[in-house]
Image 1: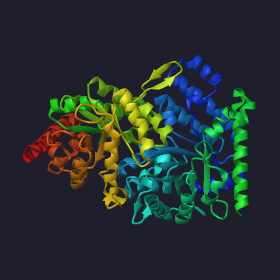
Image 2: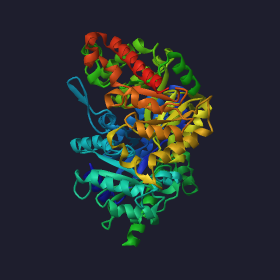
Image 3: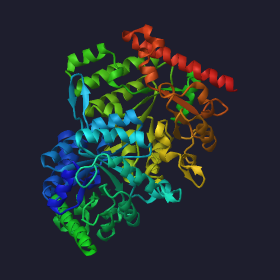
Image 4: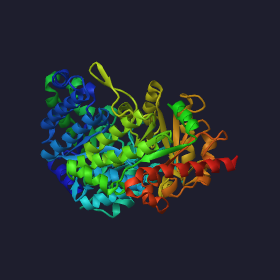
Length: 309
Length: 309
């Protein structure tokens, strides 16, 4: 799957992932209204609004981008109907040949991580049958429990040719509280980065490992160091746009071949119609606004990478 | 909710939580067979088997125990039907007046943690309505992202009078890989424990805070230190029984009043019928075997606490 991701980035010239994090505040009134007319102001109604919103974003951007990253919390908050919309979104993205990165940030002790791995990127046995319940292509994973909490995910990746992005340095303001603490004179995130490189060494695709890392765009200097520590790990970079990261900050997350990183933007794309720059599209044309925002992001990152050559 | 938990422990004399982690291998053949006859060997069939299994465990133990801890991964691995069985289990436990600790180990950047908090222990708005989608009483949370990833959970706890158990030192063999690393001369888990005490200081119930901690039974010496660092935090202690923890190891997790900790056992109770000690109950009477295992665990912990007085 890492090879597919690399190939799709090369084809689209867009190391971009669209974060499908459909907060209700982003969903235009006409979509909410229609969904609530059909299902009432219920969890099912919310889930229908999310699904219709996602579908329009996907339809307007799928030819420009290699991948999407649905944030499961935005679906899980609407309970079972919300999670059904998560699954429906994954399936639709696969129809459109998009790589799906499930942003689930799971992680637990070994036997429990094995269950999460089966449910999200692997198969689960039921009697003599086997099912792939959520079937994302990649998922994000939390490393706090150490190797035996990660290994079951890695094992499933090998079997299923799926992939991981393990949290190393997150994009939020207080990520440094624990992640930056010095251990043997170096920040904890560097030690985690070294483990990511080790975990990934045993499952290489072509140029990159199935096991990647999450490093926030908001910490470009740390990205530079981590790029060196994990040369074969693809880096998923959240925090571009709304959280403050800019194209010029991102060049050090990439390798010299211009590959090795994929940058996420969520509300900067899916709620572009709310920004002044794209307001002229209007609420009814939020999908076209999202498309324009993807094109601008591709240009921003592309010219930053070009300038850095 | 912390006050309810304390009151129920005092009433039952059992600082015990039954881990509802229904792996298929634990579910007796006759339950699986019946579920598959009704629903086929499908995800729905697996979910029905889980639900019937849980119901029997709950029916046979609910008068002896204050709380249950369903591990969501064991449900999530069966996709949407599995998660529906998770919700059905929560609702049934509430009917039986049990405190429900959702072992979900969520944690993300602020806005995303807010969505998880809404879905699991809070309310989500849909138009003019509000819903409590999963409605656990407590959930477990991962601290790797720091304060701004935790605060939304704490805020919801205050509003809804719910509670948290934040991972401090986990029970698994490689938990030390990052958690034990020395930061300013002290292990990282102590720093996390100090933060848990701080986060919890602003939301006290009676004697204890709504914000508790997870510390594995497999590390009793660390439990002793963490008990002192977080005197007002209830400690959820996994790792008893099958993972190796014994009653005598647990005394230091408790305060001198004999309160302040609740010990989880999962397979040691729900799959007790598979152990030699309870084999005489037979597979058909797995619920009674679970009850006997709860009674033995209560005795083990009770006499250890008595001996330590």
